[in-house]
Length: 247
Image (cartoon, rainbow, N blue to C red; front, side, top):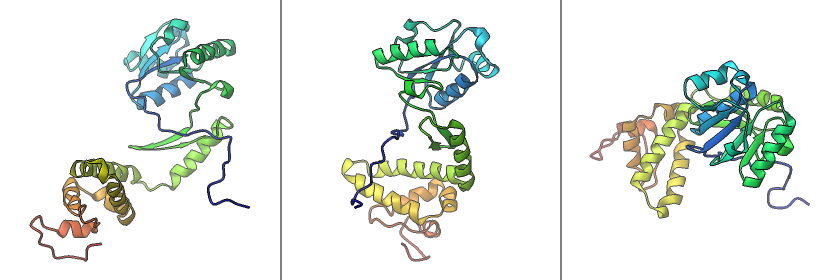
């Protein structure tokens, strides 16, 4: 008999948005896989160090080094490279060396991802679609990275073209709302009101919302109303209004 709560499926991963801004990430290796890992963590504003003999760098990683987007150590990995590191990503064609690095990370309680060796990964990289602040990740839990990429592209093709801009506008409104209602006690009301805005306004309306519109809209927060965008633009600061009924 099916219970009243979600069934536990097991075998999955805890998918999180890991904040690594200003964290120190060590990348061991300089080939194609390392290049992809570097982009991922640089996009998350991490401080990246790459350890690899210079002759092992592909063109993209060499470019990151030349542009000083990463710190570069021109040699093979040494245990001392783990000092002060928050995360380790290895991408080298040496299974024995990779396993040794993983064991060292495990001893030091440093989260590590050993490329193409799922049992020696504390976390996996998924296939990510990015549109401004919007990120959507598809993971196969290490079973089929290429398939994850195919699924991600199919999902991305179904998304509205303006979804990233809409998310940016909603983020701006949310930050302004926190200034209007900053206390923890206002939390539930803030969330409920923002939910109404997202549900009642179309993506096009959210994209078209200007900062002036936001300031006007925030005037309806206290009574808990969410007027239409048209109503917001007809509303006057002195309270005069000649337009559609407010929702």
